[in-house]
Image 1 (cartoon, rainbow, N blue to C red):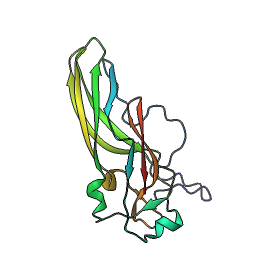
Image 2: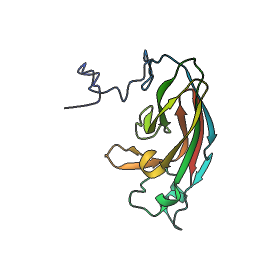
Image 3: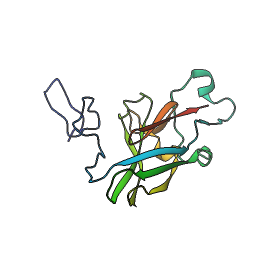
Length: 170
C-alpha cells in the first residue's frame, strides 16, 4: 500500500506525515482543565561532526551524512533541559513532547517526535524534564532510498510554544 499521496491518480495517501496544510490541532495538543508553560533551561546551539581526512563531504558540500554504526554518534549525544510549570488553578498531568523540525532535505517530515515524558503538576508547581537526545537516532531522516541520514544545517527543537535552533555542521 502506498503511503504518499499521488495527485495524478487522485489518491489521498495513507498518512499525514507529508501534510502541509494548517491542522485544526497540532499533533500532541492536549485538552486540559489547567494550563502549562514550558521554559528551555539548557540545550546546545551547535554540534560539530569531525570526519576523517579526505572525506568526500569536505569537497562536495554534503547536505546529510550516513552515520549509522559510526563512532561519531557517541559524540553527538546531548541533553535538553526544560522546565514545565502548571500556571492554571487545578492540578493536572501533561505529556511533554519534544519535536524536531529537520532541514528540508530528502523530503523530510515537517516534524518528528524525539521524546516524551509525562509529568503531574499541582497548581503553580514546576518540574524539570530532561530529554537525552542521540542525534544519529533522533534527528535522522530517511532518504529517497530508505537509508537513514543525519541532515546538516539548522534543526528546530519544539516543546509546546518554545523553540530552539540546533545547528549540525562538519
